[in-house]
Image 1: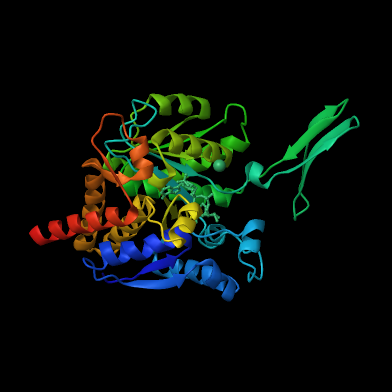
Image 2: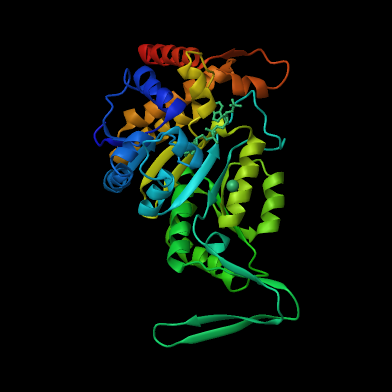
Length: 401
Ligand code: NAP
Ligand code: MG
């Protein structure tokens, strides 16, 4: 390694697994360099959450980060950790607000777990635009008849006005917005990501109905595509726009293997559908890509609290480490690509191949064993046994290599 990875440690069961992945699976094989930030809840509290912002700024500087799952405190956590000075914000939200960009979620496929949709053979990545629309809408209801207007007052005195509706009884209204700059960043992150993974990019809205609002999304994607088109053509991948209802039908009939860019609400709903249909949150990776090409890799699941409390009582747990492993391999591969280190890229590839190889050969954690196709010869193991078996496979591979 030449440039270090930004390493963001986290909480509970995933923090335990994080350390083991490093010690058993990475450090014996890679001369690992990281800039370490402890995003565990207690350290966020001790630093007044400055550590989270520092980690995000470091990601801007170095370009590639890997993050462990972290607790987002709520009321119940405030009781569990009485030392908390505040109900700290979600670290992911803080990092996203500093880096901007888009979150891409991709399922990890294995031989034993079949997607609910039979024709899906390759993963489908959902890219959700995480700004605006109904998530930043204002709304109210009225009991009296009247007229609702949409008014824009420009700083230069421009006035734009439209009647939303004249109503003669109780009614409900909502005003939403988005920003050209945010949509443009979203488009760039999506084109960049599709080029990275060499897959087609689909984008869908409802521009037949929402001619100006959704139409603007489509136009901005078309404009931005111009600068990426030569790279798409060179790689033999395509950018494909269609209506959201048509997209939904095509996704279900497809064999997978593409990136699906969705507006905020569509992405919220569709990413849950896609991840459930592919199997499990424990087999879902997530990467935040900023418009200027900074990457933050993580697992899509949380800190697996229930397992952590069993672990504290001395029990062995069967927590699935695969999504966290793929966060590390994704970050190491990207670092290798950016630094021109073929060895690091090749380690990342081997790391993933051996992880999937172990599962495909029948050794897996309980969550996967429960979902496996009936009649397959599988062994359900605890996390430590899984990690040790994987460590042996890697050692064997690199001894013979
Ligand atoms: P969770 O940690 O994802 O776990 C929910 C349940 O899903 C677990 O109890 C477990 O089911 C199953 N599961 C999830 N990941 C698994 C894995 N790797 N292996 C095996 N089973 C797995 O979600 P949560 O319990 O709602 O949230 C816990 C904490 O995580 C919260 O404090 C939340 O703020 C935080 N969180 C963080 C992130 C993030 O940092 N990106 C994301 C989501 C949540 P069983 O108990 O039935 O085995
Ligand atoms: Mg949701």
